[in-house]
Length: 320
Ligand SMILES: NC(=O)c1ccc[n+]([C@@H]2O[C@H](COP(=O)([O-])OP(=O)(O)OC[C@H]3O[C@@H](n4cnc5c(N)ncnc54)[C@H](O)[C@@H]3O)[C@@H](O)[C@H]2O)c1
Image: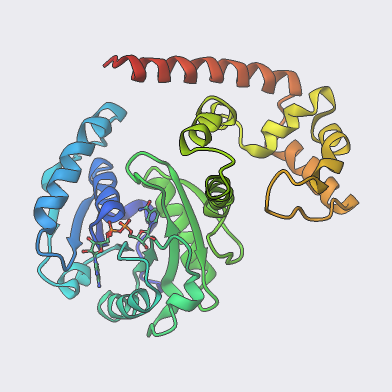
């Protein structure tokens, strides 16, 4: 990027490179938000696959509310990568998760994209530092990690690599927010970013439990959908445990359950619960609560759980 870079709010054209599950989901999202989208994917059946994905997503997107001017007609499939990026105002790469492929592809995208344009990768876990290794202008490359399906799940984790300029990270975060996403901007690279590390901890423990005959896949799924999963749509794991401490909040929770961190309740080893970690958790939960008292949070949590349970019952009954 440079002094000619367009303001995030003025972007009207985005290019998506790679149009599989995630690239196709991004395309559906950007179309629904009123952007003109150019796509490129080397597969010979790209057009029909994309058509099916967008058709399937459009009713949900319509229900959520399309932006003014949003249309499935605003999609162009380019014959080459170079043509796809030549007039892009933002590029999102969603090719297969192979490091060498990403390194070569991002270098190719970087070489063909106007120098003032930010390029983002959907990678699930590679750091931009390793992916931007062969790029001629690595300073405008960022990770913009989405969740499937990107046209419904709001979160995008944004982080740069060692050679990324901070202003490119800021630009991408602002653009994604304007494009209707919820953004976490990370200050440093961590393999798997934040949400995938948390998902992966549960996933690996689930695989261990199945491998050891401790639980079946059905029991694992029920333990989440009928258990903690019902609390997570409103409160993440930290504020959920803040409430597990009753009126004493996270401080009481850690003092009460701190010793359990030494118990073999998971194969993931806990960090030492030092005074510093305790203080950071207590203070961090106060910040996350953002002025809401424990009583407010309990009341919001209970309302949300009832609404979520009713919504799930409706889906199970097949209500339209
Ligand atoms: N599937 C998920 O839940 C998920 C979630 C978040 C991020 N991601 C990341 O998104 C990226 C894409 O994953 P996916 O699940 O959409 O995979 P996918 O296999 O569904 O799609 C990959 C697409 O890339 C195309 N492709 C192959 N070689 C290419 C190349 N050289 N240049 C451009 N496109 C090429 C393929 O034809 C295919 O359409 C990966 O980096 C993945 O880690 C996936």
